[in-house]
Length: 210
Image (tube, rainbow, N blue to C red):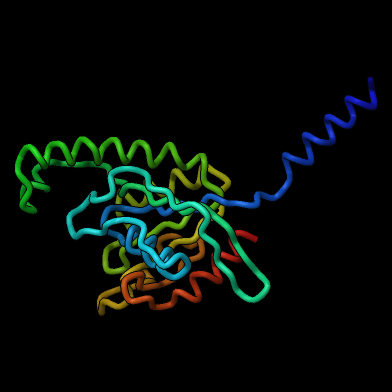
């Protein structure tokens, strides 16, 4: 009986500490930072297809989207993961902002309702993530309430984090400001739209997943 129990305990601990073969990598950040654009770049690079629809209007992505079995290779190294694109995190969602972007009042109110639910779902999904990529617009002030909320939620969890300063193809982008704002994390400047520094981004994923 003791031998059987010992085998059971050993099996539990072996499974508990066994490295996951497939990771969940989540893309988080405020609206219009470029999460879906980055998701599309990753999927085009490795799967030959896009993942979602990017839009200049905030909260285009209002539901968690998952692309299974993304495989990244470099020499003898390979990462297999599920890529999770989450709705933009916001501390306030006002339907009138959507009206100003050209949506009807009915469409705007529905979008605001769905976006609010999306924010809640995105935060809930944090507990399922093995790695989190925070995507920030490098042309905007990093010291925003939204960014601090996101980083605060991550600080409470033991999850490997990489902060991406996106849109470095735009002249006023300033990745140094992001590094100064969040010195506790690695920060990498990229352009998901143009593909700038994506090799460095993939190398950072290997480090995080290792």
